[in-house]
Image (cartoon, rainbow, N blue to C red; front, top):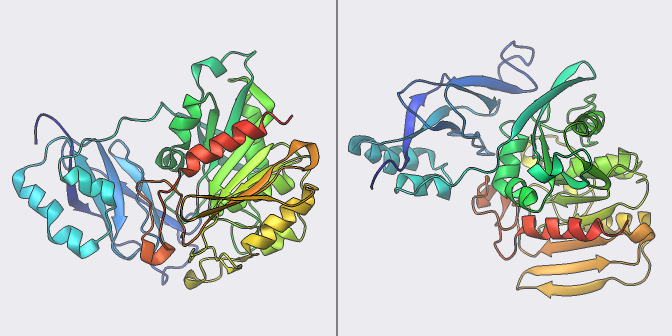
Length: 405
């Protein structure tokens, strides 16, 4: 260990025990089924994570400057702050590699690597925090505008990155973790990373976030951006995972033709949404499901059913067939294999130049393909895959789809 490489101090500060299911939902400490806690103190720090000993979704909060408010899922029964320290004394290193990690068994590989003297990754391009009031509520997002897109006469593609649900996820963290932010900006995309209210997007399942106008908020967010960046209205795209993937379907169904293409990962059409979905115009679709997904069942059914009523989805096959019919695709699909476990189905003869395709990860679970550090344990979500990068494949698809208009 040399110089000022940052190292990990585990369980530096224990937070008060958060509320559990016994707490009344109208308690002032709740906001959308979540609780805010403060990570602070303990000397110099580069940032904080929050981790839970019992949270089945095992979310980690974004690294932030201290002090930082961390939104904690109400299912958590024990939470600790994890401090990233510029220097870590030998006696504290023993904590990081010993009983604390064994007891909680929650840190993904990148935190363990930090404890073994790995440096922090280079930071992604700088986000700008934005907000507006929509439907009487303050809504937040982060945006990334490449310099070439800041000119009023620019015509840059726009990518909306939609985080998953669960209470400890935000848009910027999702876009950073998947690489959509850095790679999208490198390719000249303006990237918007909105935040859901509380824990989930209103993706059309009546059991989640009912009454929240997320479609209207995202449309207002895009309209607000137009004064700061030059956007090509024919190249507006949305990509999301899980709850964010379901939200991308809703944007295509209810977004009045605003989006040229969507890329839902580990997400199928909701049973309530498919009954009324009527996409306007030609909206290309790139699905990436996993056949061994334990939270978003490939054959359809209850979403994350082990955690209670969270609505249901139709099967992956039904979703693909619905979009093929909605886009008026003709003829048989082109099929091929990509590596050992990825089956490709692609329809190209569709209305208005739309493309409908699916990359099925055989044996794949509830994970973003190619993501080095999946946020969920395989025993909960099913196995991940590094056979391809979903981020690169999605951006390639968006680039191709944008040429169709």
